[in-house]
Amino acid sequence: MRIALITPARPGTRSGNRHTALRWAAFLRAAGHRVTVSTEWHGEPADAMLALHARRSHASIKAFPGPVILALTGTDVYHDIHHSPEARESLEVADRLIVLQPKAAEEFSTTKKVQVVVQSASTSLRHRPVKGKFRICVIGHLRAVKDPLLTLRALRHVAQDLEVIQLGELLEKDLKPKTSDRRYRWLGSVPHGRALKWLASSHAMVISSRMEGGANVVCEALRIGVPILASRISGNVGLLGERYAGYFRVGDERDLARLIEKAMDRTFYRKLKHQIAARRAMVSPRNEARALLASVASLSRSPRGRRRA
Image (cartoon, rainbow, N blue to C red; front, side, top):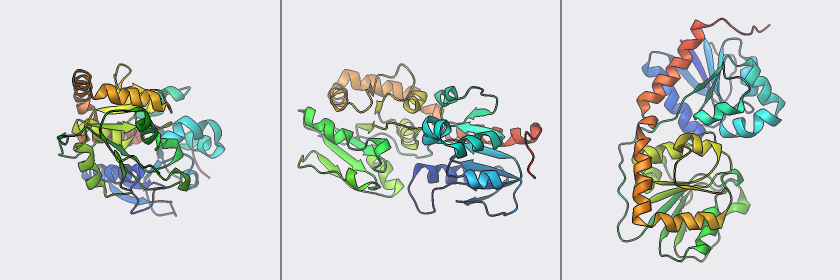
């Protein structure tokens, strides 16, 4: 099958959507499909479209005459489909909807078109935290929706000696980190492989997002075995589970500080490690590929729900 894979993330960018698109293209090609990856569809021959992002890929989705699988991002699921006419039209047009963690399906009144594809990480790195100092990493581009400076603010309420390494491109100027705290370093945007090495060498990772569909970096931390200190939002709970012990209240720097100090306790840290290890198989490439290919195969087993003029 010829598949047009559409992602608004441009070539060369280090966004999660770009990583997802390239990983999915590799899975589909390995299964014998012919895949082109682009930011928009301009009429190139294709038997089906796999599009990421309901609102930003709307024009391509609406123009494509064949079956469409729409993969929904965090801003899609928790904002755009409730507020954007373009995103809602994309939902109606699509033949299949992919969400990246199970709780995202709860946002839909009907789930007959919805399929869950949990993202994976193929890294061979294993968790080997540095010795001598407790290291926390924060990975993700600096955007308001990620609440990227929460960990830096939390440090004001942490007395212990530790190290915070933050990685990510500054996408909103007013979020540039400013501090004299020697425990904190912002290294800016780094290549993906280097970011994974920082992750593997950290004792824990903080994900402080206010909105996520199912973050790549959470899946990578699960695969490597790094304990995660996560904001209690649907996108994180869908991947880590309701009973995971490492949550803090969204936007609450004092609650994050409390959790950081708790994570530095050996007994609690071992509990986090055990819970992370228990979910590692969920983010295997084999499982992700199987779910994605099942979604594509389902297009040929069901009648077309729409027809374009």
